[in-house]
Amino acid sequence: MLDGIVKFANTIFQPLINLGSAPMMLILLTLFALVLGVKFSKALEGGIKLAVALTGMGMVINILTSAFSKSLQAFVANTGIELSITDVGWAPLATITWGSPYTLFFLMILVIINMVMLGLNKTNTLDVDIFNFWHPALLGIIILYFSNNLFVATLFVVFIGVLKFINSDLMKPTINDLLSYPEENPTTTTHLNFMLNPIIMLFDTVFDKFFYKLDKYDFNAAELNKKIGFWGSKFAIGAYLGVFVGLLGQQSVTDIFALAFTGAVSLELFSFVGSWFISAVEPLSQGITNFMAKRFPGRKLFIGIDWPFLGARAEMWATANILAPILLIMSLFLPGNSILPLAGIIAIGLTPALLIVCRGKMIRMVVIGVFMLPLFLWSGTMIAPLVTDTAQSVGAFPTSLDSSQMISHSTKEGPVEGMIAILIGKGINNPNIKSITFAIGALTLYLILFIWYAGKMKVRNKIYLEENDPNFSSDVPAEGTL
Amino acid sequence: MIKILAACGAGVNSSHQIKDSIETEMTNRGYSVQADAVVVKDITEEMMSKYDIFTPISIPDLGFTIPIPVVEAGPILYRIPVMAIPVFDALEKTIKDNNLK
Image (cartoon, rainbow over all chains, first blue to last red; front, side, top):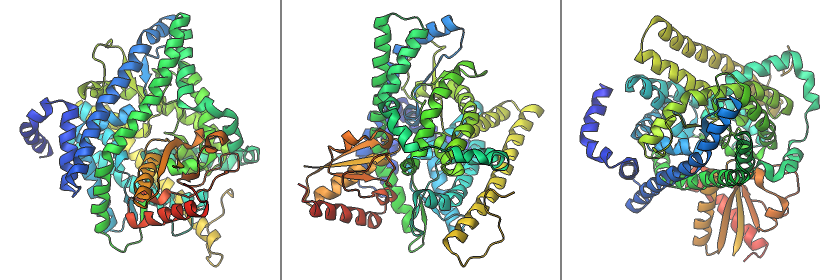
């Protein structure tokens, strides 16, 4: 039935689709915002900004991939290392996803899910981070790419959405502890980042059992960040990675300099254009928040916002800075990887989750982080064809580039979810015993792990409650005891 | 012109939301402000010395003592106007207490 609705919609909207992605999303976003009660001028402003951001992002991707294409091919030829996928970071992927009309559909589904769960008291989190709905939407788009089955794609998006809202509540006491928030502070997050928590918790549990004595070697993260200074900034990363690719591609000195400065300007521009794009979604975000908040007057809610409020903890950055060169070296040798880390080398798709589960213990964050990095490289490699094709379909990719050239993100949030989405999509497209078993098996394991993790977080949360209220009695053992 | 430094983890989403909200509201309150959005990890003492007020989401550990007044701006991100008012009130009080123009 859902496919029938989409076919009907396609018939009605085909002239719109034929206009191209930027004009189409201008109109769709404007209309959607109007339906939610946003003033016409604000709704139209958002729509135009989205079209401009889509166009701008395509231009920056063109600059970066055109400049690096020749050198990456030479790099592969000279070294034999197949790292032909250009890492463009999160901003282009967000823009590409928001360039698909399916994103608005999945956004609507997730808003409904959030409201139903709030109504049934299955969550206390009101999710106002509308921009980041692109993450679960991309999972749905992955399934659609392989199977064209909107029903299954929607089911998976709902599945992930439900777990994200539950996780947001589970993390709240840890967030309060890490940022010294008072009990009445409502801040939490539903970012897909944190769905890696269950796997990290597995490793953290092993650390608790066997390696907890290493915690005493933790070091001052803020001091480390201060020493690293500008070397961790976007333009610096772009510059020295441009030099790295140029040297290994045996390019001329002139070309190496050009690569360095093109890399630097591209990485800065990705963020700059990304901010237009966020500004574009702002009227819609406010409209949805107004709509949802009115439905729960007087209720004490947690409010799910984007993850960067956790950036106040220096450990997150120190870990990302330490993992960056490790990620680069790992990418050269990891079997099954084809991405050379560039725009995504500062792993903000990983370190917030490490911060929450390891609770700021640096040694654990770094060691466990090293074990998590391969998941990101493999997932980024696996979704590269889809990302590239989708970028082309929304007009954000230079069609003049060689067909072997692809784009992706080396530290894309939700690596496990992305891989499961691929398994599901392929299982639907080519159903056989093996593919169905893998897909169902992966989903089952994922759910079991999440349930186990939720149990561990509830134990931690009871301890937080006990620490904050001396009169509270609990028979739960303190952390670190076996 | 009162110069305000807004910061967040990626320097794109949250900090721009804070920047835009502060500029709009403080202008409505009759103040001439300019807010810049940066990634929190890129903040240096030299950078901060060029601003009058720092508005992070939550107060970060930057490895140095923050030399300018700080107003935590996190509640702006809730998108619920009544929850953001205390932030703007705190900003206005900071501007008045420090005679900023």
